[in-house]
Length: 434
Image (tube, rainbow, N blue to C red; front, top):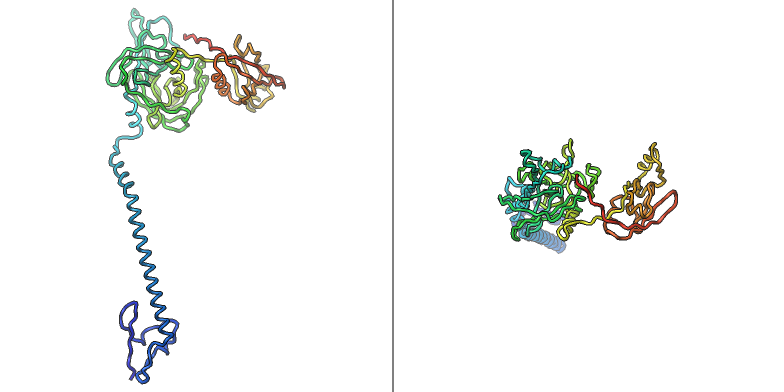
């Protein structure tokens, strides 16, 4: 009778009959034992195989445990690094007011610095029709009083009491008062106004601790950005409207105010009568423009003076009370193939254009610097001070940089010839307000 021998299987630590076990890479017959011969159940070869198998098994287990340990350490470290951020985010979420948004935050940032400008003057002339809507409407008074009252907006730019507004708001005003959000009313003095850019500065006496707005950078304004308008339409203080930036660099001619010499920011944020002089804000609550104009008969078309240009004008007004505007006295248009074709096909013109680009002179003012230098209608300006020009605004920028009395070397194309002219910009003649 065969006697069963047992061996210990290392991975499970239990007895298993030899007949039921499997030895890898071995011959089952060599594993069978009999009672008669009592042969050693482990030959030298089998012993080596078993030892190798055990070693490989424990090595595999060691690798597994090591991997688990490393993963555990990594998870602990990751949670340690990320927990403060999660906690910070949770605090932020907990602190957010569900009724607040970027508009309320922007308004709260500047509202105390936005003011209502009240003006009055003795009647003796008429206000231009294009500007009447911006004054909040004239208020009917007895004819004997002969007083015109209007309302506009403004905002504090310096804690000592300097307020920025529109020139047309305070134009020809006999008295100016400024109403603050807290109900305080102060007398104002117009330090200077510039009808060319429609910018004015008012001074009030209130110590040196008035709240001020934060200035933004209008050169960074792009279409599609948020726009927030604040003002006092019809005397309704602190009215807020919201929209987007619809366009930039709109010319004064485009919006029907050809006597203004500045580009405009276009927005669909509602700018109502009485909003003139109020700030146009970006989403961060920074001032990017001065609300100034609307187009009659159109909805969603409001315009603001870029704040960068307004600041430069304000600095001159504060320092001297006036602004020097160099001019050369031409009307011009930027050429392209379509404009060239339209001009050449026009039946009632003596101008014939050969160039596809450049700046075409379409009118030269009598007695202007351009006329004195010999510039003619039909000339195409190619370059100014060695700088190629393809847009009218570039010429204006070069003229402004040169200043009154500066030198401009102008290269023009005239009847297939190139001519060089020297111009000296002069002070822009005063604009008479009707």
